Length: 56
Image (tube, rainbow, N blue to C red; front, side, top):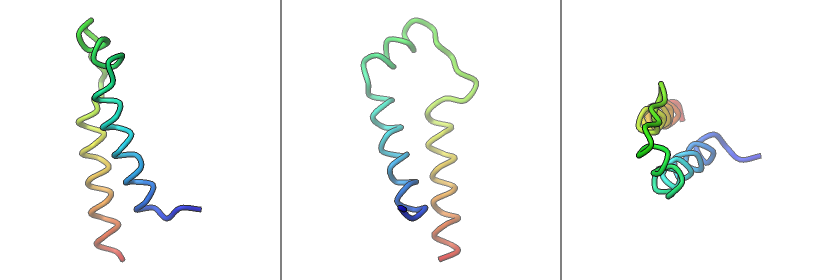
């Protein structure tokens, strides 16, 4: 099983891939406005990453 920091890194990479994906960009251009956007998700996982590092 991967450790938490590795999982967080994986998620951050996936969020970046999603944000750059043409299908996602097309949804945004069509007016898709989620309650929580990818920027919010990135911020949440960055905060979690800092918390994990603080407790190591």
